[in-house]
Image (cartoon, rainbow, N blue to C red):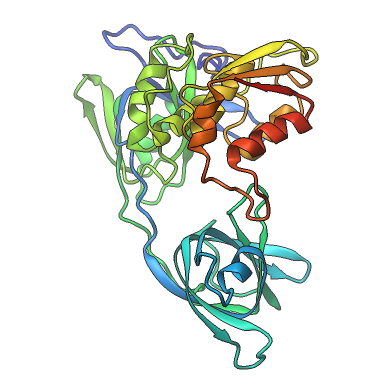
Amino acid sequence: MDDGTGVGGGVDHAVWERGFPVRYVLVQSDYDGEEEYWGRCAGVEGLFVDKLPPRREVLTLRGCTPEGPLRDALAPDGAVTGLLGEVCVEVWDGEQPMQWWSLVDTVVLAHQPNAGDPGLVDVVVGAGVEEERHWRHTLPGEPRFKMLAATSNDLPSAGWCQKIDGLFVPRYGHPAVPLHLIGCEPAEPLLTVLRRRRKYDQDRVELRALDRNGREMYRLPVHLRIETARPSVLGADLFDIRLTDGGSDRPSTAARPVWETWYRGFPATRNLWAPYGTEGRQAWLDLTTPDRNAQGPDRSGGVHHLDGRFVTDRPGLYCALAEALVGPGGFFGREWDGFKDCLGGGLGIAPPFTLVWHDSQVAREAFADDFPDPASELTYFEEMVHLLETYGATVTLR
């Protein structure tokens, strides 16, 4: 990411003459990428929030032609689990999808032949329903419902349905969680908002977190729906601003200690991510970004060493791979598809190269029961080795 100093005519907004540092800047970007500086703050409270799961609902998938994981879940011998995990529902109108929904932690509860066509099946599922956006709860002209089950890397089809009872109903989100901007020095655009403050202001800005060197770490989009603004506890010439809601994209509480590590400066040594749990490791990946300064063609060849001692989950796998290929704190994808894209080049390194995977048995054992593709007998570890070799890398397991 940027270093947090180039917004607003090149002025360095990461530095001020106070007894405490600037940790956040507020920036608004237009559709052309032009940026306007809105202010800076010493701190933010309410930034880290654990996402509450959607409430459980019972849905009926009517007139289904089940495929893949859903077909297997309905097998008469009961040998395959009815746990489908996350299911993406696409609402099609003609030849293309018009809406997208997520069914979280989906489980098959029952099924029976469809009353109108016994060749089709009605499936009752329990799931948490998440809207990809706030759709108008109206159906397209001639809807069809396509289901994709997130049980493998390529989201295999779980079949088609004629309708889904219970999908198009009003839902009310979780209570808003405020965001407090502490010790803010507003620029003129933010001062204008403070003067005219209205309940339903729609001004949208980015809250950009900085490390102690002024380097940008993270960007969080927020709406400036201001509930209160008063002289700051840090000085009367600053403001403490309370926003009614910090939005749904905030990092989890597991990310807080990870951010503190990154705040001290860009990681310079390996395995700083290793002590964290799975959520913390994912938060570590979220702070990695492509190197925008990488120039020239990708380098190939050479031997890269992967420290496999701490590869015990998927985020840990991608942390270790990135460190092996581009160094501590480096970006080389955060999940399967992203890593696959990175192998195609553009980030300074591309196969062919040799990857020496030390202590590979740790990952082999950690992923022994993780089969991303039900149609394959390869574990996630074995799939990763296969992917690397397919792109021309030589993988040496030790």
